[in-house]
Length: 99
Image (cartoon, rainbow, N blue to C red; front, side, top):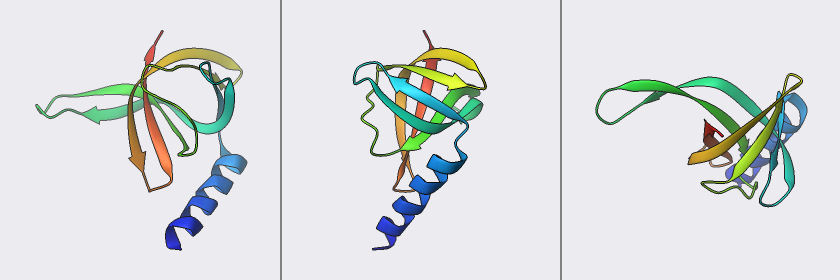
């Protein structure tokens, strides 16, 4: 029951406060999301780097190697998804690479 409440609340937050929209080319689905230009990544060997990421509702049908288009602050950016992690039982974090 708590996870359903959490999912519903997070979906409302994304729908209301998102800063970007994406289009998944494979499915032609559009979703609201939170886009981050640089998210710090820590690797197993102790090195770190940055990558653009997106937080999106876990209902989005997105897979690794999907090409997506991000509409962020009047800019249209194209990426490929290279990693997906689940967060908060209700969100996916998509790690992106430039096309």
